[in-house]
Length: 175
Image: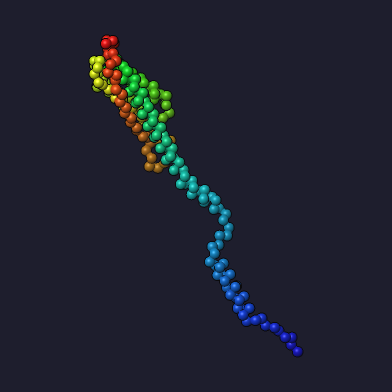
C-alpha cells in the first residue's frame, strides 16, 4: 500500500505564491545600491570642483573690498590734511604726503597707487568758502587667485572732499 500524502490547502499554497511574487517584485523595484566603494572620492571631487572656484571668488571680493577701503581711507586722510594747509601749494604737498603715508601702511593691498590733490577751489582769502578734493587710485592684484575669467588686477578709485576752514589764516598772514 502506498502511504497517504496530505496535500496542503489550496488557499495556503496560493498565499505563499503571492507572497513570493510580492517579494520578487519588491526586490526588483528597490534600488540596488550594493557596494558604494569609491563614492567618497567622487563626492570629494565634485565638492572641490564647486568649492575651490567659489572660495577664490570670495577671496577676490575680499581683496577688492580691502583695496576699496584702503583707497577711501587714504583719500579721506589726504583731503583732511590738505584742507588744514595755509596755501594751495602747501595743501597739495600735505595731501600727497598724507595719502602716500596712508597707502604705505597697507602696502600689501595695492600693487600700484596714485594720489591726486585738486586745490583749484582752495580759498585765497580769509572768509572765502573753499574745498580740497583728493582722488586716490589703487590697483589690487588678483593674479595670485587662479580663477578662469578673473582679471589679473582691479583698479579702484576713491574721491573725498574736505572743506577748508573759512576763518583760518592764509599764506601765513595771520589775519
